[in-house]
Structures are given as C-alpha cells and as structure tokens.
Image (cartoon, rainbow, N blue to C red):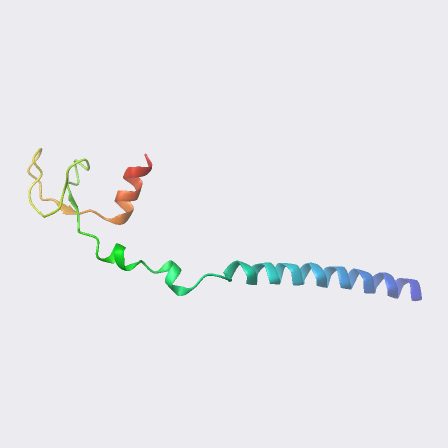
Length: 88
C-alpha cells in the first residue's frame, strides 16, 4: 500500500512539474512584449500615402489621379498589398 502511494505521489509531482513548466513557458513568451510592440510606430503612421491602379499594381504614385495605362482612378495602396507585392 505504501508503495502505491509513493508511486502515485511521484506521478503527481511529475505531472505538476510538467504543468508548471508549460504555464511558466506561456508566461515567459509574453515577457518583453509591450502594447507598443504591436502598435504601428509613428514613422509608419505618418508614411506618405501611395496610390496604385487596381489593374496595374506596378503603377505607384504619391498622389491620386488616373492610371497612365488604362485611365482608371488610382486607389490608396494598402500595407497588405504592398507586403504581398514585395514577397513575390
């Protein structure tokens, strides 16, 4: 009987240690991050707006106007569209 209790206690200690390790690991992942890390920086917020043609993404201008290829209105380029374009 004593042997079973020791075995159960050892198992409980091991499981508790593993659970504590996961908990501490999850807590450590958040360390060093602040709310400003995920917010856009002042430089990104004040970046000049770029306009592009929906049909011709290679057309990029600093101000709104018409696409020189097709004549469509230029639309503001989004950050996601710029990221996707540079990754290719």
